[in-house]
Image (cartoon, rainbow, N blue to C red; front, top):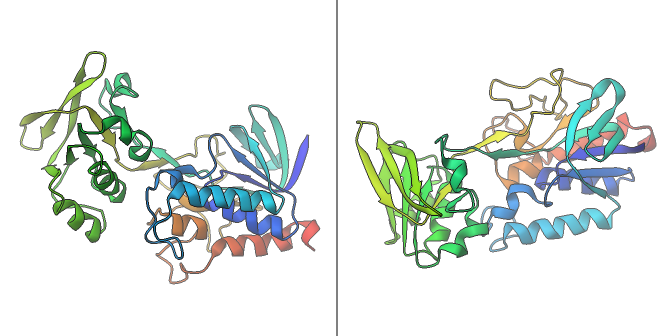
Length: 314
């Protein structure tokens, strides 16, 4: 059974940052990723709020980060973790078990669905959760974006460069998105707002043809559309994490200011942690703006702790 000084589950911004720091420090580092390195950062079309990267795409930044981690000796394991056993310092993967001296959970989140019964029937046939991935399929067409946060508005603005018409459907009149994004959307003649309603039904035969928007007052409006991009937020990927690792009421992992979980030797970083902002800048720092110390690179904190925790560093 292979053993690592530091095993990192998740190769998004937090996992890659941790891997780079730990590998440069001389640790034997394994990074487990079940899909493509970069996580949701790959979906960012343009990064405008991460220092030194203005205009670069999320996928380009993650490719560079992946190469950097490999350069310093981090080993990538493309597999899925199905369980973690702290008493045995072991992670169970579909392809076999892996031992660790310290563990960093950087598993991120997954997309929240609309909850409409037949939503799954149209996935890949009009329903998508990634505008950057699937937007080009809707060139010159009409699309709907469901949501009111940053992701929804970024998706809508991106899709407006491709589609002829973009509806933003949101359950209330106010938005969680940054003001600058809201203003850009309001000033875009291709974008129309449908507020105080949610998607209540998907219609179509071989592909999506329309959706029903159900309003708070009981009314229903049918929007003819070729595609729906769901951007309703996220849920933490913590289903495989054992109960002894404390989570909040929403399933996010609770840590102290050193990113230590309730189990000694197990840390959490990035979007899977209990925090307010879920962006590349905060994921790679692993910190929370609720603390005045949120600007500190807290992945560095983790690695400093690992220096004391792992014998190879002593």
